[in-house]
Amino acid sequence: MRQANLKGKASVGKGLFITFEGGEGAGKSTQIRRLADRLRDYARELVVTREPGGTELAERLREIILSGGAKKFGPLGEAVLFSAARIDHIDKVIAPALSRGAVVLCDRFADSTRAYQGARGEVAEAAMDALEQAALAGCRPDLTFILDLAPDIGLARAKNRRGEGAADRFEGEADSFHGLLREKFRDIAGAEPNRCRLIDAERSQDEVAAAIWQAMAEKFRQREHEAEAPAEASQP
Ligand code: T5A
Image 1 (cartoon, protein in one colour):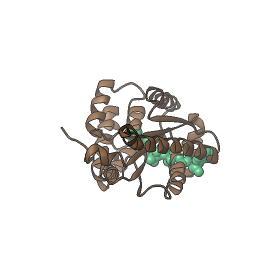
Image 2: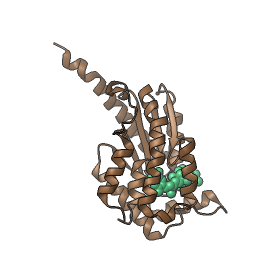
Image 3: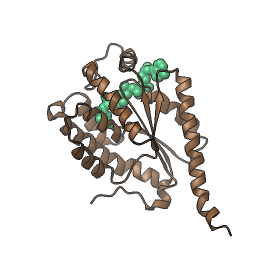
Image 4: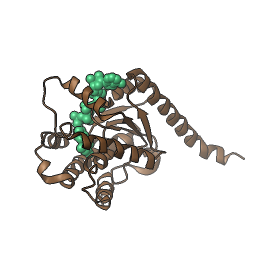
């Protein structure tokens, strides 16, 4: 079975894998930029990447999927394509960076497949689980920010940003889809409270950034505590 190239638990533990999720126009790119600016003083190496994409092959798949060229495959087929792009991204970018001890900030990851391709319930949970397990090969985020906002606000922001350009494959979906998407992301946050932080993204950029930074600081404290724990335990 494929295993992500994460070189031993000890070295993987030095890296930190952070993902950003949410519906359309939630503000992920904005917040990743802001967090990256702040983290440069703390991280020995910072890698900012995105999905679908992050490698040449995955960027090619991105073009096909977001242009609507794979829509006819249906949600399972699209989930398979997103996962194929993810495998390349993990193997070539994410896992090596984590093994070097980098902080990796990734704009969307596996939760997007669960939410977007799973929104209408057309892909069996068991198939989604199997696909995710095979694609991730143990490379799971340490922390995930789920930016939560009413779909109409996010879509209006996305529309405003793209101006006269056409909506892409998923932005152009029906309002009901975007409502289901929000519920899916909320369910994911509820199911994995240790990993996920649900962030109210209807607030100002500064307020959202402050909430994200607070969660980051907690994560760093937790990491420090974990690193100190064996030493404490070995004290007489
Ligand atoms: N997809 C992806 C799947 O279906 N399955 C998968 O497995 C994966 C990985 C990717 C698409 O692929 C789908 C999901 C997506 O539909 P994309 O082009 O990468 O598409 O786009 P998105 O990830 O959707 O990101 P967006 O570009 O739509 O939005 P962001 O990055 O969330 O938002 P951002 O930061 O660009 O902000 C949008 C606008 O709002 C403003 C910004 O200035 C910007 O103009 N803004 C705010 N305005 C007011 N208040 C705030 N707090 C604001 N924050 C940002």
